[in-house]
Image: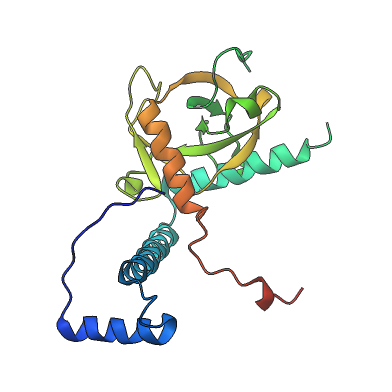
Length: 88
Length: 131
């Protein structure tokens, strides 16, 4: 996958903690700050997507009645009708 | 129901599914075909998402708003419910009503991808399931 470089600033203490952790995990010669931060960012983004998904479904769960409920019932009916004719 | 012209791409087309009082739907329901044409050309069962006019869905991240235009054939501003794909018998559909744009189709498929978590962001722990 193509990558692009960005510049970020960390507090000195945070950078020190990062290096200590990488030294523990990989050794000082093999530590890779960029890779570690990329991994952390991916986890952060994934968590954000999950929270957004949960909120989206929570919001849908609070929608009662109206045309949205009728459409959901219709979708169930469509699936049921399709299932009934599965062996035709 | 009208004969469907299968020489035309079906993906992105809007059809009408008939009214079904038994399931509480008080009107014929527009649906959007999301199955790829490789599937619709060969199968009598198409994967669609239902269309709703419920204004509460406007701006919802899993719903894609569709305008009432000559092109879509929709009579009211509507919303594709990307989180509720279902299969439908091709013979039961009336139409087509119209077609959505490529950008709208991509938005619906993107919302479907999000709604079903196809990237598998959600932790999945099959070992925790007791069967």
